[in-house]
Length: 194
Image (cartoon, rainbow, N blue to C red; front, side, top):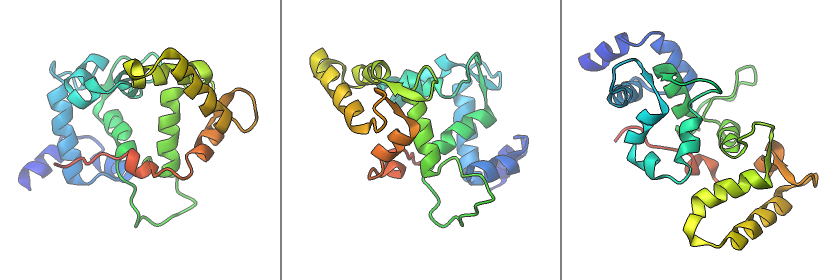
């Protein structure tokens, strides 16, 4: 326990970070150790290429998009607090957390997870997933498994089914509605302590 407290004492505003993200002290220490292992140059910041050391991410067909989600437009590095805030999207939802309408939704809520997933598709950040953006993701994910014609058919069918206002794109509301029956918490959760 002494080493946990020692590590936590080196992290500025750690209490606020735990409150905001819902991570326990043990999670924060584990994430801090992981952050330091990725920070080979010991700068206190990670660059996109530092994430290449995460095998599951390097092998993920949309790994570049996931890595990109850690960085705001024009931002070239991410600090520990930002790293933890992004990873909090993948923390399983706390079923026992009381719902307080005056408090902002936790970053691991269903809506927050859906917004995070939506922005992986909406690369031009216009609030809609276009056919071209959907095709880019499908190509990355299904690459050699299907023909281009099949990819286009999947994209067309997906947009046709989800596009309620018939503008040939998928808004966040349409995206959310199309995934109503999907257990997004299960699909977008990572066990942080192993």
